[in-house]
Amino acid sequence: MKKTTTSRYDVAQHLRNSKEMAAYLEACLDEAGDDAAFIAKALGDIARAKGLAQVARDAGLSRESLYKALSGERSPGFDTILKVLGALGLKLHAVAARG
Image (cartoon, rainbow, N blue to C red; front, side):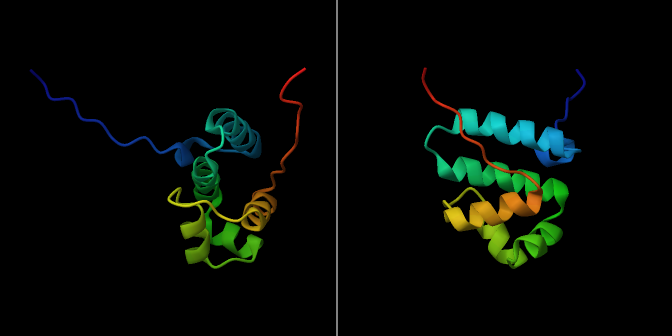
């Protein structure tokens, strides 16, 4: 029997444009509930797709700070989230949760 090999799936390799990035973030926001680290990881995926160094420059953060903030191991501050969203060309919007 032939062995099957698999490779790790990296969503950042499949986020090719801003519409795909926005749709991915929207789906992650729907799934995350109150898990801020999950959202940070999703933003990290998008930042990797765009290029961490460029996103860090555009957000006014060091590459290392950006990587740590979006690793998913901790919850970054809201100011960091807003800077990263701006650097990614994305924005938050609110909708009523009920009724």
